[in-house]
Image (tube, rainbow, N blue to C red):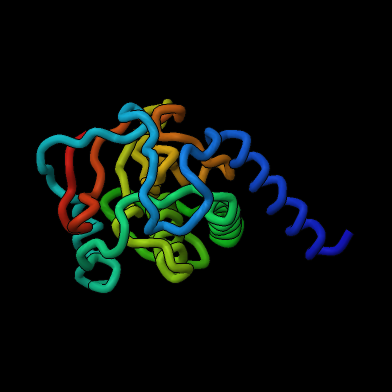
Length: 199
């Protein structure tokens, strides 16, 4: 079987997995700017007071100012079929393209568009690719979490009409934030990516 067929089949499977995992769209099919019927409040992350941004993220912003500009566009993406398909495709392609490697102790570095990297590098790359595809930066937030094994981890959270959805390099499945195995610690503000909030 050719590489193209394998990739196409895997991509289709990823899109199907996402469409089964996500609840049916509550609003009409259409663009991001239309008025939305929002998912229940429990499907959105509730952030409270300001907290410190990860130090490695501060360094990332110093070197990549365009990735840390004030949020643009709609805060919520309407999850029609086209957006679901595109989100699944970008999540899958980045998970496949980056070779997982881990920073050593006290050497944590956040980067985007890399050939190899750890969790935050996957998430930053997905965020950058989604923005390049026309997704509003305001709807795309980095979050710091812990896995079920207690390990520090970072993911990308996409705010949609179906709730906050999680793009995680450990899986091609895209799930609502409250249907993951993660313990939530902090997340970026949608208005100012340099500002982080406690969850």
